[in-house]
Length: 233
Image 1 (tube, rainbow, N blue to C red):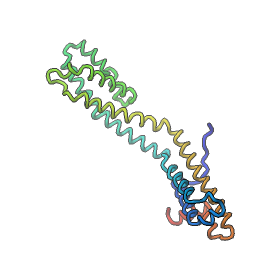
Image 2: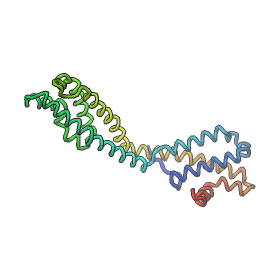
Image 3: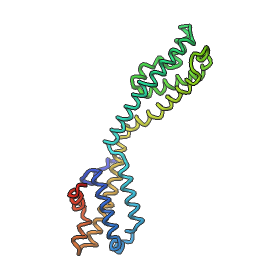
Image 4: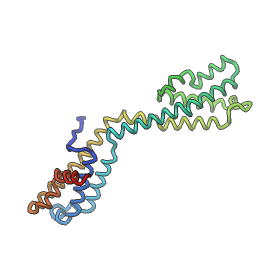
């Protein structure tokens, strides 16, 4: 699939403001514009404004990068904080529950501890697997772990909550930058569409008001952007 080319020579924010101004001008001159083309009516205008807003809401590269950084901060805080503490607690619970060192090594491996150091070094996919192993181990060995008032009875539930929190965040984090190219193309496609519609309105408006220079100027794209700049938009 060929990369989408940008059709407009302005920023995204200026594009959407310009398109909205075209929509305003169309609304103000709706009677004459509808007399030229019946499609120009309130419903058509509402649909166009919805397309402008939808294009505005698609993330651009900068917004995606900011979201990626914020998600990474959240994941690092969760990993180095609650998850690291939870594994530390679990190791001590297992030390008391399994006094035989050889037996304990087998259980620690089953609970994911052999991969824990690498996982805690922000290897998110591995950490998800290790968390699942540990959560499964806790559920299967709850009786041994809680005997003698060792592991609190609600520890398994708390650990599972951490696992679910991690599971919810990691896919979003990984997808943000993996889908950067696709997201950029989508942003361009929908933005090009609203720009082409604006150009169509402007072309029709220039024709309808060809004998009225002041009104015709309301449908000249460059003039609209210049006016926005003059007014500080």
